[in-house]
Length: 125
Ligand code: AMP
Image (cartoon, rainbow, N blue to C red):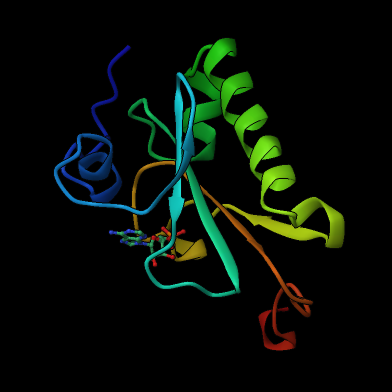
């Protein structure tokens, strides 16, 4: 299925094609996980589908059940293998302009390794 909105030259597409390096965490048939280049917590892992999806809605509405299951199972596997599940962690996905999404390839941030504090600053309400 094509997606005319998708920019095939975004940085995560280039990582998936092996054109630029990334510090791999693990991968699966349909998904790939790597460390964020600018970590916002002691553990900051990005998980992306291999397919061309711009954001969460695009992924959830167009990806196959197999891709969606593969993605979330990999997230859960990482949470166990990187000791995130024991102390707790946070999943964030930025979607569109108001969120400040920088890279237009669907991804989630897995953040942990310390107490993370409030989700947003009070000025955001
Ligand atoms: P977002 O604002 O949700 O789109 O987040 C994009 C994230 O990608 C940021 O946290 C960046 O630090 C991260 N990032 C950008 N380029 C790279 C890269 N080459 N390798 C790893 N992470 C990256």
